[in-house]
Amino acid sequence: MSLLEGLALFLLLLSGVLVVTLRNAIHAALALILNFLVLAGVYVALDARFLGFIQVIVYAGAIVVLFLFVIMLLFAAQGEIGFDPLVRSKPLAALLALGVAGVLATGLWGLRLAFTQDLKGGLPQALGPLLYGDWLFVLLAAGFLLMAATVVAVALVQPTRPLDALRPEERKEEKEVVR
Image 1 (tube, rainbow, N blue to C red):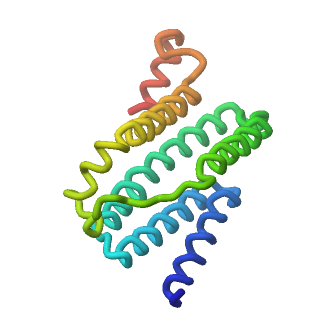
Image 2: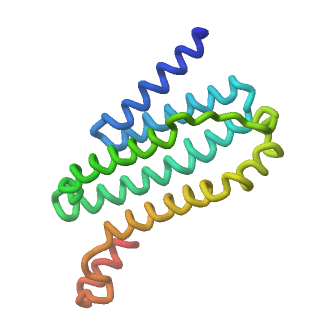
């Protein structure tokens, strides 16, 4: 293992641990960006430049912006009601995390990854048929999960009364705030 590989391994592990241990969600999102950027550097070092660029554009760009949007929505809701509504669900979240880790461990047990196709350095012409062929369901499932997470986050922060249920003077105050 070369010095750069060791440094990349250390930075990936460190940023991954920081993502799950930092108490400030914004700092955790910044650690996630660091993780994505180091992983993009690993892709470029492996001569898969297209994958490195996609890693930066899609993950470090769009996905982290989506995470930050959800974080800001949840913080806004927490400020309105005065407490964290998700505190009670921590034991359930820990149990579900262990279950998912168990499922992943049993799924990866004895798995041998061998690509029968030459990926040609991660060029789009080689990756397109692979992604939209055998892995189409996985790609669609990941997109659906991201969309569902966004919809749930927005639903969590909706006010208890819709704007049309407010009294006229409350509606004027709401409109002034929106502008």
